[in-house]
Amino acid sequence: MSPWERRERGGLYYTRSRKEGGRVVREYVGGGILGELAAQMDALERERREEQAARWKEEQEELDALEATVEELSEASDLLVRAALLASGYRQHNRGEWRRRRELKESR
Amino acid sequence: MSSKKADSNAKSDSYSPSELATDKKKLMDLIDRAQDGDEGALPLLRKILDEVPSVARIIDLARNVERSLIENMSGDDVFTQEAIPRNLKAMRKEIAGENPSPLERLLAERITVCWLELQYFQAIYAQNLGDLSITQSDYHQRRIDKVHKRYLSSIKALAQIRKMGPAVQINIAEKQINTSG
Image (cartoon, rainbow over all chains, first blue to last red; front, top):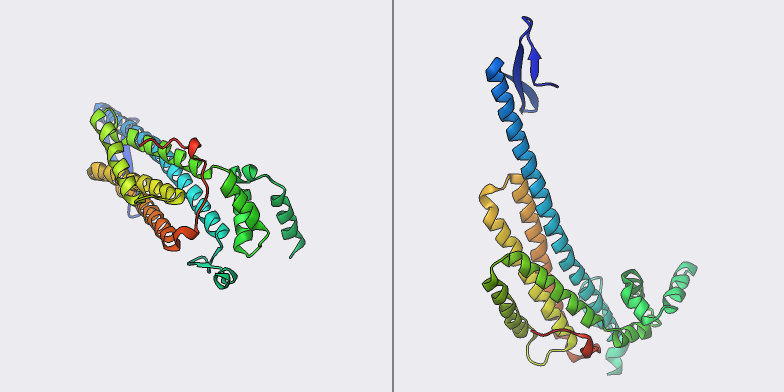
């Protein structure tokens, strides 16, 4: 919906919409030069917010990528630890504690 | 044994140790087989641990991750670029202890990287605290929680290996590790 509203007498009136308690509330700012100024200020503010959001997104993507490399390292070392424990005769009990296999315990 | 499972066993048995070590899914299948009590999976698992320099590869990965974290943390500050690796070296040495096994060395590397990651994300959060929206703050906190959990689990893994003692050993291709520092 355009923020400019045409009045009955023909002039254009600048409006701002915002949400209040889940409902859209329309604020009537003004026409003529006042409306133009308010529209320009709003456009600048919108641009600033968009730039900020893009910067935040870019930063988070960089941090996500960094975090993914640590995740990869953790997964790889977990896999190796599991392989080493199994190869050494241990079994994980109900996805918790690692215990030496009974037959190996008895053969000691 | 179901025919599907038998098929999968026959398949993973036909791969070479190096093929299995580089394919995470196949390696996980083999580990699951061993976990399920399939004795036949153990010789291949041992062969992978003996022949493939997995530890060396993971330690290299740890060093690369560490470098990226340091670059992000220090920016153009050359003092910090010098100081952090020195602190990490001392920390790694202290965690690994005297005469660590290859596995202990690897897990000490992992703990150090996870610790550094946690410091980094906590610092970012603290530096931006005043400028963050509730959603952004929540996002940072969730990330810190996740990283903290990962750090604790890295400590737990080392404690577990130490508890088992020298019974848990793997061979390592020392020549292929670049672990200066």
